[in-house]
Length: 92
Image 1 (tube, helix red, strand yellow):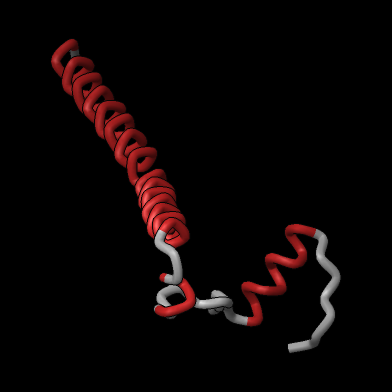
Image 2 (cartoon, one colour):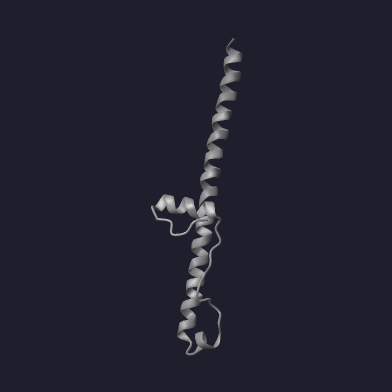
């Protein structure tokens, strides 16, 4: 009887260990995209600020667009508007 108890205890402890490792990997997986976007933002910001230091560079070269367009589906726009309490001005 004691062997059965130890057997199931070991199985239970291994399941707990696997669950803890899974949680650790999930938490690490969530932050990589934010870190990547922030790093990219800093790189673009530095590139734009460097171009201001060179006289006539921004007038001569059209490196950076005046407008930046983001793509989103109609559903994503509606969800964003509902989440942030923005009144819809157009219908999709």
